Length: 140
Image (cartoon, rainbow, N blue to C red):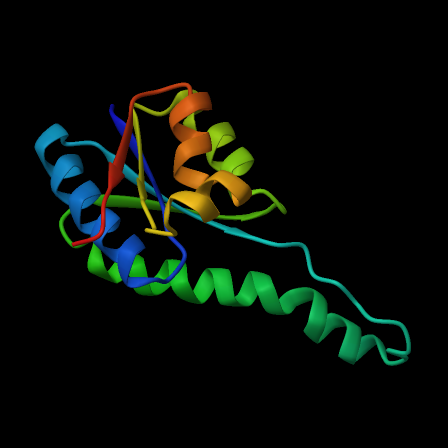
């Protein structure tokens, strides 16, 4: 069965990538795998209560789950899997998810040529390193 991975982050751009991936998944009668990559949390010094530390540590994962649930509702008519991945590099995490995928779908964010050269971009890194075909959905 085809497994189409789509990287989501809650943005309008990733919602467009999701819409495209849903249609492609329907055509292939496959499984849509939603992947949200979040940064590991940082607990500042001076946090004394375990409850406060737990709120900070669990916050990014809770937000990831919230976005995944919202996006899963948008994927009507297809089988959906969800992965919240803790990793400081979204590109690396998505490349890892591409290993057993039929296709990897991500959105492109128009940062402009200079910023893209200085910072690099997730979609550019994925295009070079993914282990399956990549679809990059450009902004309107």
